[in-house]
Each structure stands twice: as C-alpha cells, then as structure tokens.
Length: 319
Image (cartoon, rainbow, N blue to C red; front, top):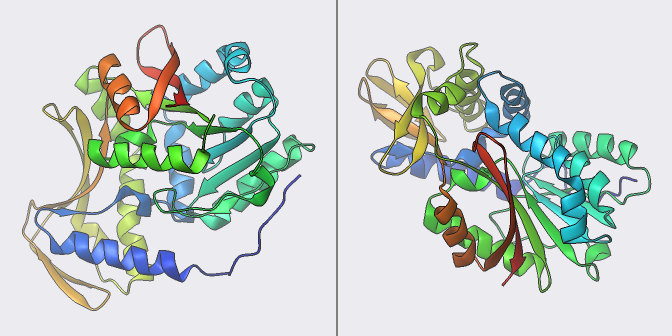
C-alpha cells in the first residue's frame, strides 16, 4: 500500500542547491559538477536505459546476486525490518530483496520526485500488504524518516555501487550519516563495483549506442532549462576515462571549440579540449571495501560476489 507524505509541489531548497552547485562547479578549475544533478526525470529514464545495455554489467550482475542469495539475506537479516533504500530510482532490484526478507515497511528515498512516486506506486501494487513510504530528498542531506518506522529495526539498502560516485572522504561521511539515520541495531546492504580490466570499464561508461553520452549531455540540457543557461549542447562531447591512480572511471563533458556561455546570470568560458568533470565511479578491491565501511561506522558481516568477481554485495552491521 502506497502512503504519501504531504509535500509542496516544488522544492525550493533543491532548486537553490542545484543553482549553487552548478555555479560553483563551473567557476572552479578544473570544472566539476556533482553527479546527483543528473537525475531529473529524463536523466532517471536514461539511466534505466543504461542499466539494460549489453556493456553495462553492474545492474544485471547485482540483480543476479539478489536473486541467487535471497535465503542468505533472510537468514542474516531476519523478518520485520523497515527497508530504507537510498537513491531508489526505479527500485527495479528491490523486489528481489523484499520478497526474501519479509519487511514491515519500505521507504524509498530519491531526489527525483516524479520518478520516485511512479516507481513507488508500481512497487506498492506488487506488494499490496507492505507500507510503501516514498521520501523525496537528497540522501546526502539531513533527512527525517516517516514516523511509521520509528520503532522498527532498519535495513539500509544502497545498491548499484552509488557509493563509488563519491570521493573516499565524502563516502565515509555518507556512511556515517546513514549510520546515524538508521540507528542502533541497523544493518546495511550495499553494492560495490570491483576493480577490473579498464577496457571493460570504459565500455560500460561509453556504450556503442550512445545512451551514456545522452545521459551525460542531459545535465547540460537541464542546466539550460532550469538555470537560464545557453550552453551549446552540440559543442560538447561525452568522454569516459580510466584514472588508474585513483581506481575510478571519470565522465567528462569536453568542449569541442572555445566557448562562452551563461548560467543563472553568470558568464563562463571554456577552451577547446577543456572539460567539465561530471562524475567519478570508484572501483574497489576487497580490502578497500572493508576499510571504507569500517571508517563509516559499519562492521562487514557477509559478502556475496559473482563468479567472475565483477561486483559485490556486502551486508554490514552498525558498529
């Protein structure tokens, strides 16, 4: 059953945060913008297309782990928890977890309100006896969970290796914030992408069909639409680069010629070949995963990895 909280039609805090982050990001050198702003409705739709691409292994690999290890999750987590999903999006993987562990409530959190409410309605229809409580917001910010889950033990769910989009220090801060939000006795099931052949990684973030390029460029379209921008989209190109020293894929938007443009009343310039660094996706080794979680206040308890060692799901307990 879908239960909605009263909320204003617009989110002026999110709007001002978007403006601040984009103006600050374009003002620095090198230019960089937070990946959270990819996810307007169109960006969310494009990401769902990316998840089905043959080159993009993370979604299908993680989904297979969720399907295969349901009994293990049930044994380790137990019934009756409130599942809190951070960055839920379409929640396409979530039914596998919900079927396995018999939760008491489900709280999906996402910054894209329209997309979140649509996916929550679909999930509520599939699980008619389960309270579904969508929460529109930025999971990096302070949040208040619905009162209905106050007295329930909680399981955080953070799939997709979204943790990899953050610098390690920011990832630790986020894990600590999750630890505070979820409280004593909480658990966290988190997906982490593994270090692997750079050619395979680059292909996953620069697909032959150009969907990831459209996803990256959609950020500029959103800036033009919502922040009175005049960026010439045709003069930018998507680039995916493996940074071996930092063990991460970087997505950039490269200027194909010298550019001058405006955003939110501010003037900007770029040289030919200069880029806007729009996303990083860090990859982890086994020790990296353990260290990151412990630094964030979580003690790893169980881990599941596919036979090819592409992706891991880790269950951790609040330390």
